[in-house]
Length: 58
Image (cartoon, rainbow, N blue to C red; front, side, top):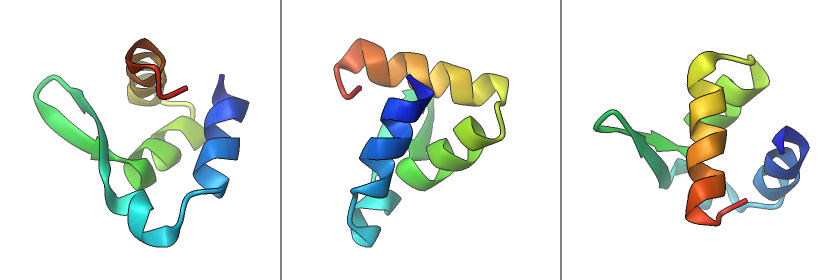
């Protein structure tokens, strides 16, 4: 699923990357933050991926 996220992220226009895509524990996360967390393999990144999958984004 990480590779699917990378493909979607790579095709987003720069302004879109600042948009909020997930809220985890009441905190909003943008595409840019998600990219950083997922690329670094953090636990938060995994939670963001799961949330995006649950919402049908990925």
